[in-house]
Length: 257
Image (cartoon, rainbow, N blue to C red):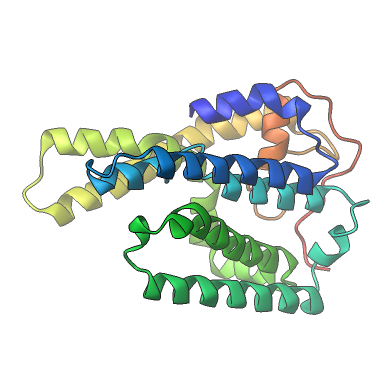
Protein backbone atom coordinates (compact mmCIF):
# COMPACT_ATOMS: atom_id res chain seq x y z
CA UNK A 1 0.00 0.00 0.00
CA UNK A 2 2.87 2.37 0.79
CA UNK A 3 4.11 1.83 -2.76
CA UNK A 4 0.90 3.21 -4.27
CA UNK A 5 1.06 6.25 -1.99
CA UNK A 6 4.65 6.78 -3.12
CA UNK A 7 3.62 6.43 -6.78
CA UNK A 8 0.87 9.02 -6.31
CA UNK A 9 3.51 11.62 -5.53
CA UNK A 10 6.11 10.66 -8.14
CA UNK A 11 3.78 9.83 -11.04
CA UNK A 12 3.67 13.43 -12.27
CA UNK A 13 7.40 13.28 -13.01
CA UNK A 14 7.22 10.08 -15.04
CA UNK A 15 7.62 10.61 -18.82
CA UNK A 16 4.08 9.48 -19.68
CA UNK A 17 4.66 9.98 -23.42
CA UNK A 18 7.69 7.69 -23.37
CA UNK A 19 6.27 4.36 -22.13
CA UNK A 20 9.36 2.34 -23.01
CA UNK A 21 11.56 4.64 -20.96
CA UNK A 22 9.22 4.12 -18.01
CA UNK A 23 9.35 0.36 -18.56
CA UNK A 24 13.14 0.22 -18.85
CA UNK A 25 13.58 2.40 -15.76
CA UNK A 26 11.42 0.14 -13.61
CA UNK A 27 13.06 -2.96 -15.05
CA UNK A 28 16.54 -1.59 -14.35
CA UNK A 29 15.60 -0.94 -10.73
CA UNK A 30 14.19 -4.45 -10.34
CA UNK A 31 17.23 -6.12 -11.89
CA UNK A 32 19.63 -4.00 -9.84
CA UNK A 33 17.74 -4.81 -6.64
CA UNK A 34 17.69 -8.57 -7.28
CA UNK A 35 21.39 -8.48 -8.18
CA UNK A 36 22.17 -6.58 -5.00
CA UNK A 37 20.13 -9.02 -2.91
CA UNK A 38 21.93 -11.98 -4.47
CA UNK A 39 25.45 -10.66 -4.01
CA UNK A 40 24.85 -9.48 -0.43
CA UNK A 41 22.95 -12.55 0.74
CA UNK A 42 24.62 -14.58 3.47
CA UNK A 43 24.61 -18.27 2.36
CA UNK A 44 24.43 -19.36 5.99
CA UNK A 45 20.90 -17.93 6.25
CA UNK A 46 17.72 -19.75 5.34
CA UNK A 47 17.18 -19.71 1.57
CA UNK A 48 13.58 -18.64 2.19
CA UNK A 49 14.92 -15.24 3.22
CA UNK A 50 16.42 -14.83 -0.24
CA UNK A 51 13.13 -16.00 -1.81
CA UNK A 52 11.21 -13.38 0.15
CA UNK A 53 13.60 -10.56 -0.70
CA UNK A 54 13.49 -11.12 -4.47
CA UNK A 55 9.70 -11.43 -4.54
CA UNK A 56 8.87 -8.16 -2.81
CA UNK A 57 9.13 -4.54 -3.88
CA UNK A 58 11.23 -3.19 -5.49
CA UNK A 59 12.28 -6.59 -6.88
CA UNK A 60 9.03 -6.91 -8.90
CA UNK A 61 9.02 -3.44 -10.45
CA UNK A 62 9.81 -4.92 -13.87
CA UNK A 63 6.31 -6.41 -14.07
CA UNK A 64 4.81 -3.15 -12.82
CA UNK A 65 6.75 -1.18 -15.44
CA UNK A 66 5.55 -3.44 -18.25
CA UNK A 67 1.97 -2.92 -17.12
CA UNK A 68 2.48 0.85 -17.05
CA UNK A 69 3.98 0.80 -20.54
CA UNK A 70 1.04 -1.15 -21.97
CA UNK A 71 -1.47 1.21 -20.36
CA UNK A 72 0.36 4.30 -21.64
CA UNK A 73 0.56 2.94 -25.19
CA UNK A 74 -3.15 2.09 -25.19
CA UNK A 75 -3.98 5.64 -24.08
CA UNK A 76 -1.61 7.41 -26.45
CA UNK A 77 -3.02 7.31 -29.98
CA UNK A 78 0.10 8.98 -31.32
CA UNK A 79 2.43 6.18 -30.22
CA UNK A 80 3.67 3.93 -33.03
CA UNK A 81 2.68 0.79 -31.07
CA UNK A 82 -0.88 1.97 -30.40
CA UNK A 83 -2.29 0.56 -33.63
CA UNK A 84 -0.94 -2.89 -32.79
CA UNK A 85 -2.97 -2.93 -29.57
CA UNK A 86 -6.23 -2.16 -31.33
CA UNK A 87 -8.84 -4.91 -31.54
CA UNK A 88 -8.14 -7.11 -34.54
CA UNK A 89 -7.42 -10.75 -35.28
CA UNK A 90 -4.06 -10.01 -36.90
CA UNK A 91 -2.86 -8.08 -33.85
CA UNK A 92 -4.21 -10.59 -31.36
CA UNK A 93 -2.66 -13.57 -33.17
CA UNK A 94 0.78 -11.91 -33.18
CA UNK A 95 0.56 -11.21 -29.45
CA UNK A 96 -0.72 -14.73 -28.83
CA UNK A 97 2.26 -16.26 -30.64
CA UNK A 98 4.66 -14.09 -28.63
CA UNK A 99 2.88 -15.00 -25.38
CA UNK A 100 3.04 -18.73 -26.14
CA UNK A 101 6.73 -18.59 -27.09
CA UNK A 102 7.78 -16.70 -23.98
CA UNK A 103 5.56 -18.86 -21.77
CA UNK A 104 7.02 -22.08 -23.17
CA UNK A 105 10.57 -20.79 -22.74
CA UNK A 106 9.79 -19.78 -19.15
CA UNK A 107 8.22 -23.16 -18.33
CA UNK A 108 11.10 -25.02 -19.97
CA UNK A 109 13.67 -23.11 -17.94
CA UNK A 110 11.65 -23.65 -14.77
CA UNK A 111 11.40 -27.39 -15.43
CA UNK A 112 15.17 -27.64 -15.90
CA UNK A 113 16.22 -25.28 -13.10
CA UNK A 114 13.30 -25.83 -10.72
CA UNK A 115 15.57 -25.32 -7.70
CA UNK A 116 17.01 -22.13 -9.17
CA UNK A 117 17.60 -20.19 -5.97
CA UNK A 118 21.26 -21.20 -6.06
CA UNK A 119 21.79 -19.88 -9.60
CA UNK A 120 22.53 -16.14 -9.75
CA UNK A 121 21.35 -15.64 -13.33
CA UNK A 122 18.00 -17.33 -12.65
CA UNK A 123 17.41 -15.34 -9.48
CA UNK A 124 18.19 -12.06 -11.24
CA UNK A 125 16.75 -12.60 -14.74
CA UNK A 126 14.01 -15.23 -14.60
CA UNK A 127 11.29 -13.00 -13.13
CA UNK A 128 11.81 -10.46 -15.93
CA UNK A 129 11.36 -13.21 -18.53
CA UNK A 130 8.20 -14.34 -16.78
CA UNK A 131 6.93 -10.76 -16.61
CA UNK A 132 7.41 -10.43 -20.38
CA UNK A 133 5.39 -13.59 -20.96
CA UNK A 134 2.49 -12.23 -18.89
CA UNK A 135 2.78 -8.83 -20.59
CA UNK A 136 2.31 -10.49 -23.98
CA UNK A 137 -0.77 -12.29 -22.66
CA UNK A 138 -2.17 -8.94 -21.56
CA UNK A 139 -1.49 -7.47 -25.02
CA UNK A 140 -3.25 -10.45 -26.58
CA UNK A 141 -6.35 -9.87 -24.47
CA UNK A 142 -6.30 -6.12 -25.20
CA UNK A 143 -6.17 -6.78 -28.97
CA UNK A 144 -8.68 -9.63 -28.92
CA UNK A 145 -11.73 -8.66 -31.05
CA UNK A 146 -14.03 -10.97 -29.10
CA UNK A 147 -13.03 -9.64 -25.67
CA UNK A 148 -16.47 -8.07 -25.09
CA UNK A 149 -18.11 -11.48 -25.56
CA UNK A 150 -15.38 -13.05 -23.44
CA UNK A 151 -16.07 -10.49 -20.69
CA UNK A 152 -19.74 -11.50 -20.66
CA UNK A 153 -18.88 -15.19 -20.49
CA UNK A 154 -16.36 -14.58 -17.72
CA UNK A 155 -18.48 -11.97 -15.94
CA UNK A 156 -17.69 -13.43 -12.50
CA UNK A 157 -13.96 -13.16 -13.10
CA UNK A 158 -14.50 -9.66 -14.51
CA UNK A 159 -16.15 -8.66 -11.24
CA UNK A 160 -13.26 -10.13 -9.27
CA UNK A 161 -11.00 -7.96 -11.42
CA UNK A 162 -13.00 -4.88 -10.44
CA UNK A 163 -12.56 -5.53 -6.73
CA UNK A 164 -8.99 -6.83 -7.09
CA UNK A 165 -7.43 -3.77 -5.44
CA UNK A 166 -9.53 -4.42 -2.35
CA UNK A 167 -8.47 -8.06 -2.43
CA UNK A 168 -4.85 -6.92 -2.53
CA UNK A 169 -5.39 -4.56 0.41
CA UNK A 170 -7.44 -6.79 2.71
CA UNK A 171 -6.32 -10.37 2.15
CA UNK A 172 -3.41 -10.32 4.59
CA UNK A 173 -5.48 -8.81 7.39
CA UNK A 174 -8.13 -11.46 6.82
CA UNK A 175 -5.52 -14.23 6.86
CA UNK A 176 -4.13 -12.97 10.17
CA UNK A 177 -7.64 -12.76 11.62
CA UNK A 178 -8.52 -16.32 10.58
CA UNK A 179 -5.21 -17.60 11.96
CA UNK A 180 -6.01 -16.02 15.34
CA UNK A 181 -9.49 -17.51 15.66
CA UNK A 182 -8.27 -20.92 14.45
CA UNK A 183 -10.19 -23.44 12.36
CA UNK A 184 -10.72 -27.18 12.74
CA UNK A 185 -9.53 -27.92 9.22
CA UNK A 186 -7.19 -26.00 6.86
CA UNK A 187 -9.79 -26.09 4.08
CA UNK A 188 -12.30 -24.38 6.38
CA UNK A 189 -9.78 -21.65 7.10
CA UNK A 190 -8.99 -21.21 3.42
CA UNK A 191 -12.68 -21.01 2.54
CA UNK A 192 -13.33 -18.43 5.26
CA UNK A 193 -10.38 -16.33 4.05
CA UNK A 194 -11.72 -16.33 0.49
CA UNK A 195 -15.29 -15.47 1.53
CA UNK A 196 -14.31 -12.69 3.95
CA UNK A 197 -11.78 -11.18 1.55
CA UNK A 198 -14.27 -11.10 -1.32
CA UNK A 199 -17.02 -9.70 0.92
CA UNK A 200 -14.87 -6.88 2.33
CA UNK A 201 -13.38 -6.07 -1.08
CA UNK A 202 -16.85 -5.94 -2.63
CA UNK A 203 -18.05 -3.63 0.13
CA UNK A 204 -15.13 -1.21 -0.23
CA UNK A 205 -15.52 -1.20 -4.03
CA UNK A 206 -19.22 -0.34 -4.01
CA UNK A 207 -19.22 2.09 -1.07
CA UNK A 208 -15.77 3.72 -1.28
CA UNK A 209 -13.77 3.18 -4.49
CA UNK A 210 -16.54 3.45 -7.09
CA UNK A 211 -18.32 6.47 -5.50
CA UNK A 212 -15.03 8.37 -5.16
CA UNK A 213 -14.08 7.61 -8.75
CA UNK A 214 -17.44 8.82 -10.01
CA UNK A 215 -17.37 11.92 -7.85
CA UNK A 216 -13.88 13.17 -8.65
CA UNK A 217 -12.92 11.84 -12.05
CA UNK A 218 -15.95 10.67 -14.02
CA UNK A 219 -15.65 13.26 -16.81
CA UNK A 220 -16.06 12.83 -20.59
CA UNK A 221 -12.81 11.70 -22.16
CA UNK A 222 -11.01 11.25 -18.85
CA UNK A 223 -12.98 8.51 -17.13
CA UNK A 224 -11.07 6.32 -14.72
CA UNK A 225 -13.56 3.52 -15.34
CA UNK A 226 -13.72 1.52 -18.57
CA UNK A 227 -17.06 1.97 -20.36
CA UNK A 228 -17.45 -1.74 -21.15
CA UNK A 229 -16.05 -3.70 -18.20
CA UNK A 230 -15.99 -1.11 -15.43
CA UNK A 231 -12.38 -1.76 -14.41
CA UNK A 232 -10.30 1.05 -12.95
CA UNK A 233 -7.78 2.79 -15.16
CA UNK A 234 -4.81 2.75 -12.76
CA UNK A 235 -2.96 5.42 -14.73
CA UNK A 236 -5.78 7.93 -14.33
CA UNK A 237 -6.31 6.91 -10.72
CA UNK A 238 -2.68 7.61 -9.88
CA UNK A 239 -2.79 10.84 -11.85
CA UNK A 240 -5.86 11.91 -9.88
CA UNK A 241 -4.16 11.21 -6.56
CA UNK A 242 -1.11 13.19 -7.69
CA UNK A 243 -3.35 16.12 -8.77
CA UNK A 244 -2.03 15.79 -12.29
CA UNK A 245 -3.81 17.59 -15.15
CA UNK A 246 -5.86 15.27 -17.40
CA UNK A 247 -4.01 14.04 -20.44
CA UNK A 248 -4.92 15.51 -23.79
CA UNK A 249 -5.39 12.06 -25.29
CA UNK A 250 -8.90 10.61 -24.83
CA UNK A 251 -9.31 7.28 -23.14
CA UNK A 252 -9.54 4.41 -25.56
CA UNK A 253 -12.73 2.47 -24.86
CA UNK A 254 -12.16 -1.25 -24.64
CA UNK A 255 -14.88 -2.17 -27.13
CA UNK A 256 -14.59 -4.41 -30.15
CA UNK A 257 -14.17 -2.76 -33.51
